Length: 418
Image (cartoon, rainbow, N blue to C red; front, side, top):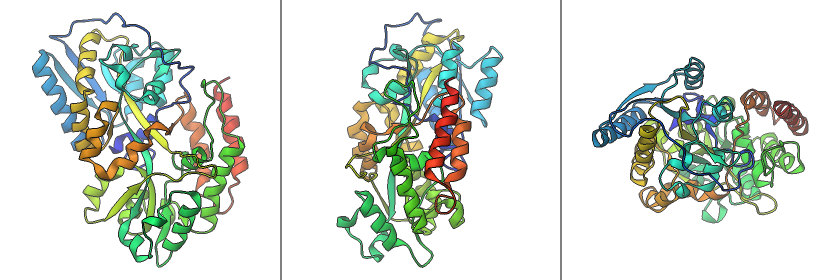
């Protein structure tokens, strides 16, 4: 599902802001409160659903699902695909006529909560304890669970197996540690191929920070923790690979994102999320590749990043009860598995895990990482702060100073909390 990764893949730019914020939930303690009083009735309602679509596959899958629910319940749903989702949702909310239901992006989540535009309906969704705890935490503020996680993605390493075998590498060489990843990247670099190509953003190098034991925020989400020895060690590792020439960024190999570099044979390895699977099927169907978990860091800690969004219900909606009914339908394990098949996302319900792995054995690495993945920040205004940091990542191999980058990132992020 590329739409959710709009910062990650050029064709999808809103999506990267949809990351779950495990460490920025504002004091989540596992309590979600009791059911709320929902407006409207569950039958005979006409709902509007705004979403940022990745393309026909996602739009058609969502239309089929809401039509089926409508037939069962006697409701109707008008889909509102948004070319610029963040802007259009903001305008709708500001205009006083928001859609009843919408994709809730973490980039907007806390702003919606603070402006009382988001109804706290997460606890009203059936079997809410079945959602992955980290995803629930992402959409919880002051112990109130606002919206049900729709799906999620994690980062892993994708390897071109033909180039891997050609370099004489075997399963014993898989990049399970930083040392092995570096050694593999060196062996795979040459003859127009770069060992590792990944996006020049915090949404990639942040995985190395996590593997070094770093975080983005403290446990209760009240302070940023960017400028730490752990995060510096992770960023310096990326810098080391870049200086050695075994890590490059897409622009440096004339591609738009890591998946394109992998598909065109310009990268032997890339770091992307499970949205890559659908892209490879469509754009590079003959490519042979495998997916392995991100490596452990210097202390043996596993680390990666996760991305998500939720089903937000407007506080001003007159059809909240019907909207919750629709969310119940859309988040059943059966429907989530259908979305996983057509759109390329992972179910947010733990009960769907086993069947997802059975249906998608090549994606097990992605879902195995769910328990320890670190999410992006949801603090309003952070997208602009991150953009300043991201602009320096491409020069890690030359002029950028990791210590200065983290110091500035800390300063700019701290200003958002004042």
